[in-house]
Every structure is written in structure tokens, then in C-alpha cells.
Amino acid sequence: MESKYKLLEARLNHILSPLGFEFYPFKVGWYNEKVGEAYVLPYNSDTLAFSIISTPDMFEKTFKPFIFEQDLSGTQDPIDQCMIHHFNLVKQEFPEEEIEVIHDFEMTFSRRPKVLLQTAGHVSGAAYYYRQNDLKENTWPQNKKMLGVIIHPKYGGWFAFRTVVIFKNIKCPDLEQQLPEDCVPTQELRKELFERFNFHWQDWSFRDIIAPVKRYSEEQKLYFQTLPKDRHELLVKMKKKHMCGD
Ligand code: B12
Image 1: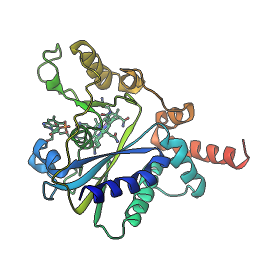
Image 2: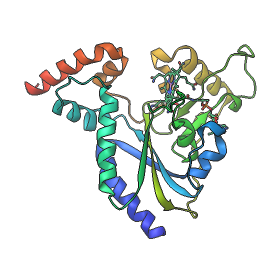
Image 3: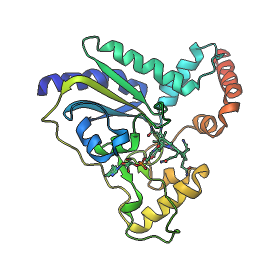
Image 4: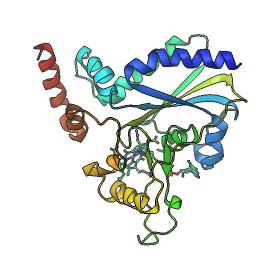
């Protein structure tokens, strides 16, 4: 079993690393133990799953080559389109397995996210999910719900959760849980993190709460800071520039 798992990990690494993704294994049961009933994934608790993040390199390594191949006339969000395309390819690489891929943007009929990627990220050891009760005390109004935020030990906030990939028929009872690195350990810094993420998220300063090894490129920053309705124009310009060989 151990060797089957190692082999699978090596195959995933071969596909995902060159594209600028990182993946972290977890048992579905670890996730289900944390979330409320509405979010429970309907699989045996020993089922093998992976939490997948895009690193700052994904934009240049995967997204740009993808959009240069597209006619850009579709209505779906180009990043979502790109993720669907590449994770369909991942599925095709494992024809012998039954795989479910759940993307960050997928919702149930009742408009709930199909999977909570921050919780999956935490239980897989990818990165620490700072939640309101990680603060001993705070000065915000009692009824103010502060949204939790994940900080990655290498990338700070300069990454995104993309998918959870579930290998429905693989059980991994012996998988050892890796604890995420608590890289925002002091109460003072955690409070600062919550304030940046909840009140000033548009200035992106939460991403720099710790010094990251890499940030998004200027072009990537521009893309994600542009309103979705105006991104098409930007992509057309990027594509033209690429075709002119600039
Ligand atoms: C809906 C949503 C929003 C909503 C509301 C968020 C919310 N939390 O309610 C809105 C539109 C406001 C929003 C905004 C933003 N979002 Co948003 N959002 C989401 C989305 C799609 C679902 C989150 C959600 O509904 N959670 C439901 C609540 C109930 O979950 P929860 O609070 O975590 O509660 C669970 C845990 O506490 C768990 N639990 C219980 N006990 C324990 C114990 C432990 C130890 C653990 C680990 C868990 C756990 O159980 C609870 C559920 O039962 C996720 C993607 C995804 N599919 O996960 C992105 C996501 C959370 N957003 C993200 C981001 C970056 C943003 C924005 C900065 C905008 C942006 N995309 O750039 C802003 C910033 C927030 C702000 N100040 O407005 C990132 C967060 C990355 C990070 N570093 O943490 C995510 C993961 C998207 C991604 N692709 O990476 N978002």
C-alpha cells in the first residue's frame, strides 16, 4: 500500500510541479471531523484526497500558455476554465482510478461551497488556517464575524487554493497527519492578520504578513487586481503582446 501511494504521489508530482501547483495528502475523515454536517464529504474516512494550491508560478507556467491557445470568446472565468482543463487532464492520467475533482468555485444546489478549501488545507498540513478562536482576546464588536485566513509558510498569502482531488477507491489508513506550520505564532501578529484580511483585503497586505519566498509577478498582480468584467481586455492585450514576440 505504501509503495502504491508513493508511486501515485510521484505521478502527481510529475504532472503538477512543472505547472506551478503543490499538493498535500489527507484522509477525508480528517476533514469530515472538523466541518459541520452540511459540508461532510460522502466518503469513507480513510479515503485518500489531496489539497491543491497554485503557487506564484502557476500564472506564467500554466495560465498564460492556456489563454494563448484560447479564442477568448467564452463566458466562463478564464482561471476557472484553465483549472477545469488541467484537472481533467490529471483525471485522464489515472484511467484506472475513480477520481472526483472539486474546484474552489463549485457550489451545491443550496449555494454552499462543495468543499471548504481552507479546512482541507489545514488538515492536509499545507498551511495553517487562522480562525477567530485562535485569538485569545480581541477588541472587535462581539457580533462581528471575522473571516479566517490561511498563511502558507513559504508563500505567505501569495497563493490560492484550487481544488481537492479525491481518489474514491484508495484507502490510506496508515497515512500520517502532518501538522501545518504555525508561521503567525504571536497574538499581536494574528490580530494584525485578521484586521488586514477582513478590513483591508483589497490592498493585499495580508499576503505579506510574513516574508514570502516569492510573490506574484507584476503582470499577475495586475490581472487579479483588475475587476473580472475588465479582465478580458487585459487578456487580449497579453495575447497580442505574446504573438508579436514582445
Ligand atoms: C464564500 C467565500 C467568500 C465569501 C465569504 C467567506 C466566508 N468564509 O464566509 C466572501 C465573498 C466574503 C469572500 C471574500 C474573500 N475571499 Co473568499 N472564499 C469563499 C469560498 C468560496 C467559501 C468559503 C466559505 O463559504 N466558508 C464557509 C464557512 C462557514 O467556513 P469556515 O468559516 O471556514 O468554517 C468552517 C471551519 O471553521 C471548520 N472548522 C470547525 N472547527 C475547525 C477546527 C479546525 C482546526 C479547522 C482547520 C477547521 C474547523 O468548520 C466550519 C464549517 O462547518 C472559499 C473557497 C472554498 N471553496 O473554500 C474562498 C476563500 C476562502 N476566499 C479567499 C479569498 C482570498 C478571499 C478574498 C481575499 C477575495 C479574493 N478572492 O481575493 C476576500 C477576503 C475576505 C473579505 N474580507 O471579504 C481564499 C482564502 C485564501 C486564504 N489565504 O485563506 C479562498 C480559500 C479562495 C481560494 N481559492 O483560495 N470569500
